[in-house]
Length: 115
Image (cartoon, rainbow, N blue to C red):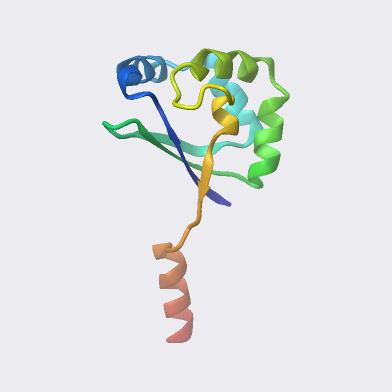
């Protein structure tokens, strides 16, 4: 399953957000991997737009596995003030985006039609 989401970092705090993500806590990295957050990347726009991408077996299950970890609770508390909507933990405020195109899937479909 491929998942893309958006969120918003406060524009005045972009450098702090970048600084914190340049060296994420090793135990947080391990927890993400163990919870099944694979090929996980974050992209940050100059206006605070944050786009995340990951691959997982089931996004709800992967989020639930992270929610069970102590390190995630501590990380989300640390990150909360950097986001536009700081009343909601950052990982609960993601807006999931619909995938409308995938090159590999369309190439495979086109190839199967041609054979």
